Length: 384
Ligand SMILES: Nc1nc2c(ncn2[C@@H]2O[C@H](COP(=O)(O)OP(=O)(O)OP(=O)(O)O)[C@@H](O)[C@H]2O)c(=O)[nH]1
Image (cartoon, rainbow, N blue to C red):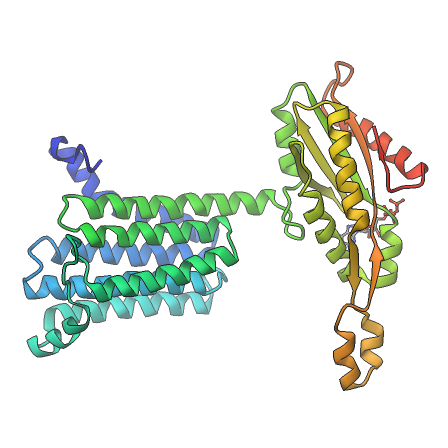
């Protein structure tokens, strides 16, 4: 868009000018629908910043109000974007969410007042800190650059700590929003980059909602719904394995449901390391499915056996709760450390899609039959 902008018709230029507002409206509607405060905050930050740029920054930066607007927007965007990433998502209609919106509205009012009504002396005091002193052709000031860089580093650490679709989207929408600040002299740059920023959060909002519907919360694996969707798109040439944790009921009865959940998560993370092109799904309860697209039975069995062995060789640490309750305070400290370990094993039944299978359900049935055989044979084994 930026490359061809000069040659575009005036009506197309108008569309580009209004695009950030249009995308903001769409994102806001979806954010309310998805119940996501973080998306609404991005909409508010971007909409106000874009308005500020359009309103005050279409003139040379040495005009006092332009200088002040630029100074403030360079601090407003990074600080609010990083804060948004750091505050945990807890819905768009909670008290905390409304406080956050109000905080932004107050900031927007203060900024507008500062630009229009602050005395020249007070303005120059603020500008001494943040004024746009160009560095190497960039318009952004060194202090604004320092603030943006610090906020980007914090946002990146947050992203690395919890890389979900939404945090990835929030991070890159932040990058897209601060980018034009360094190149404000280019025509239409803010329209294009604020639009990009909105599109990124819009897309990540869709991704996050999609994952919510298709991902299993406990294990982080894709769920049964996604398995059947994937299977519907495959006609032939795949191998499918059903994986079941051995004696899991006994385990649950002995150590409790919470420890059982930990075991499920551990087995899921080990299974997810399967090689050879296997994709893992939580089928339900303590059963998992591994799908090998375009692979033969022997190929799948070899990789599944490796993963079965890996699970059997990984000791699972149990915290002894009952003893902890009886123990004295000092002893309690001791007991919070893993006390004993247990061995977890899985049995695996495998089936390859053939002409005799009319549909995916029949392949699953055959893999289930093989799984029963594995249990009969004494468990901790792969049967194909
Ligand atoms: N903690 C926990 N337990 C679950 C979950 N889903 C299913 N279970 C338990 O998994 C157990 C399944 O046990 P069974 O199907 O009887 O079989 P098993 O004890 O694993 O024995 P074999 O399969 O014959 O080796 C039941 O006790 C369920 O309550 C879950 O999400 N969390």
